[in-house]
Image 1 (cartoon, rainbow, N blue to C red):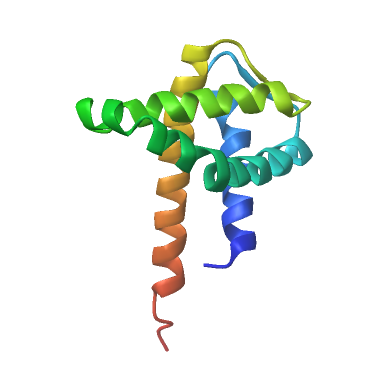
Image 2: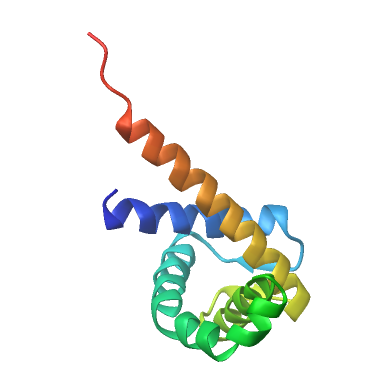
Length: 120
């Protein structure tokens, strides 16, 4: 799936987030596009470093600590991107969980729809 589609899907997931998680607000589609861009950059730069640093704790919790890391990164993003607010750390953890579910589901649906053969 092209990178632009993934970016748009992530932006749409950020737009849906305030409707699902109280305490999170996104100003508009432009803000959602910026959020999706920064979220992708954070996930390929900062997240791997945090996962390595917290590996023992992650192993001890069988990977559940990853949700805390994702929440922290979303909370951090709320302080960086203008027009995106997260009202607390635990709201960010819940938001990151919902964001992951929306993104995974939409990527799955997109992947399936792109693989469907065209019937004649």
